[in-house]
Amino acid sequence: MSSSDPRQKRLMGSRMALAMSGMVLLLVIIAGCSTTSGVKAGDTIRVFYTVSFPGTEPFEGNVNGTPLEFTVGDGTVIQGFENAVIGMNPGETKTVTISPEEGYGLRNETLVKEVDIETALAFVQNLDQMGTSRILFFPGMEPVFEYTFPGNVVVHYTFYNITGESTTIDQNHPLAGKDLVFTITLEEIVKKQ
Image (cartoon, rainbow, N blue to C red):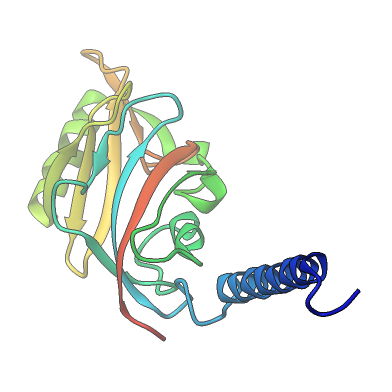
């Protein structure tokens, strides 16, 4: 076959096209594995998120508000949330289920006590004098009283089984022991580490 043979030219053209597509694929793979892209520990980022219990509608989030800004690894958010954003790129959205171990911890039954109603009322009055409070509502749960004390110390109390004589006070975080489903959208990496 001579170099002017049309079959030879087609074969050479096919080989070049195959080689070029292989090089393009290699570049895409290398770019996708680049260590310079994606969120890393120490980066300051802004995210939008929603959180729900598995199989339910979101009960909290900031999708229609201001993005949450934090530095990955500084402990501002729960460990599972920090782990979920590692490797994300701006504009990317992901949904993750976070276990209690990476969320708000397991429930501690020693933090649940039954007390007489007079003790409970005195307890609440004392808390109201020491800090600021707000009431939180979560689907399928009793209202939760959140108190913030000087030094930004936050504690939660749930009162249930209330009768005229006694009540149960639960000092666990209201989301302790629960799987949580987060949908996270990375808006931007504000500052790379």
